[in-house]
Length: 118
Length: 108
Image (cartoon, rainbow over all chains, first blue to last red; front, side):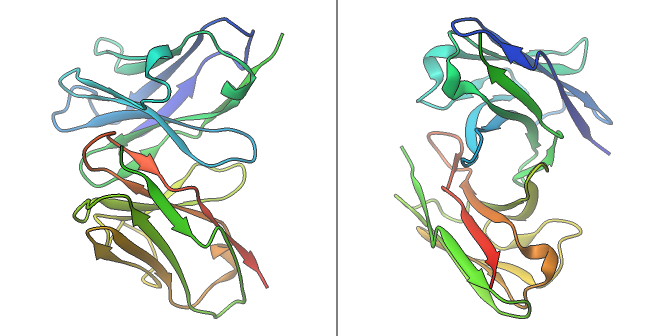
């Protein structure tokens, strides 16, 4: 059964780059037809899709974040990653990774809290 | 860009009640709508995909319907564990995904 696990620093300074990794177990990140996604939820707010990467490597980003976001895959480690540059306080959130095989985002990581503060 | 508008933003109901949450897309999105349940401190739980298909393990009291621009999530008989926030999401076109703003379901 597919499982996802986020990892990365819980505290990032303003103007720096937020970097998170999602480790995939129970399946291969190279499996065709999978979208691998990042979603976040700021405190007291709703879910926000950040971006996704298809098994082919094609990336899709939320237009509101596109200029600061990069998602990539490391097939050798069965992981995918998120980088958000020039972070500010509004980037403080719980960050989730999730997978979609054509049935909605049906597998989610447990989430990791990232706080932007000096 | 496709926008998803949920209503109501909050709802009070009692155990045993039937509740319906509505989601409207800013353009036709066929049946590419998914629904999620979110509880504080927990990862989102997928409920429904493709507007009406139940995810594995989701109780049958949850149902979804709609196509085009108008979609609904219905809980036929509320249970104590159903009090949570619910989000719709499209998975059609550009951008790839957008979530609705959420509907908080509270105990009356």
